[in-house]
Length: 362
Image (cartoon, rainbow, N blue to C red):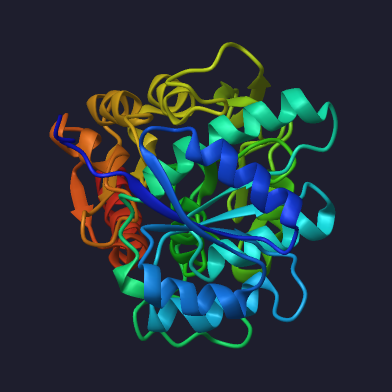
C-alpha cells in the first residue's frame, strides 16, 4: 500500500557510540521517522548532511574536536537545517544549549540525569515529538547570516515616557528564545514591566533569564511568587510553573502555581494572558510569537476583548507559524508584523496611548 506521508529523515550527531545507538533505535521505532545516518563528530556530520540531505539534525553540543556551537555558526549560514539539541542538565549544558538556540537550533531535549530507563522513555517521546515539529520549522533566514562575535546589550534605543500602570505580556514556544531576544533587546530601559511565558522545562528558565539579562537594557530575571511587575523589569515564567498577574492596590503582583497543564503546557501562555485580560485589561499589551499549537490564542483574544492592544508575529519570520496563526485566525491580533518590527510598533503604541490619556485628562 502506498504511503501518503513522507517520513522525517534524521541524522544523529553524538560522540558517544552508546548514545548514537540508543537514539537510533528509539527514533527508528517511530513510523514517522527514518534515521538516515549517525555521526561521531561534526566533521563526519558535515559530509553526511550534504550527501544524505536529512530533514532534521539531532546534535550533542558538548563534543570534542569542534563543539556544537562552533558547528552551528559554520553550518547554519551555509546549509540551514532544523537542529534539535540533545544536552545535559548540568549548568554547562544549559549555558551551551541557550547559545545553541541563539545560533540557529530550533529546540532541545535534556538527557535524563536519574532513573535512566524511565527518564530515557520520557526523553525519547519528547525527542520524537520535537523532531516532527522541527521538520516543519522555517530556518531559511539563517542563510548567509553573519554572526556577531558577542551579542551584548544594544544601546541607543529611543526612550519611553514613564508609565506605571501598563504591562506587556509575551508568549512563545518553538523558536521563541531567539524571537524573545530580538523583541526585548531593543526595548528602552524604562519600558513598562514585561511578563513572559516561553515553553521551557524546569532548570532552563533561570539560565535563559540570565542570558536575556545580558542583551536587554531592562533587568531580566526568572519570576518568583510575589514579584512586583515594575517599569524596566522583565519577568520570565519558571519552568514547570504557571504564572499569573494579580492587581494589589496600585501594583501588579506575580503568582505562581503548579495546577494541571493547560494546552499540554506548564507554564501556559493562556494562563498568563487570561489573568492579564482579567486584572490588567486595557492597560495591557499582548504579544504572541513563534510556536507550535494554539496556546495563547484564546488568552490573547480575551485580552483584546478587554481593550488591550495585541501583536502577532507573521508567518514569514516565524520558525513555526502555529500559535500566531491560530491567534490571527481567531481575530485576536490587532497588528500582525515581521519579528523585527514588533518592538518598534509596540513602543510607538505605548507612546500614542500615553498621549491620548494625557489629552483626556487635561
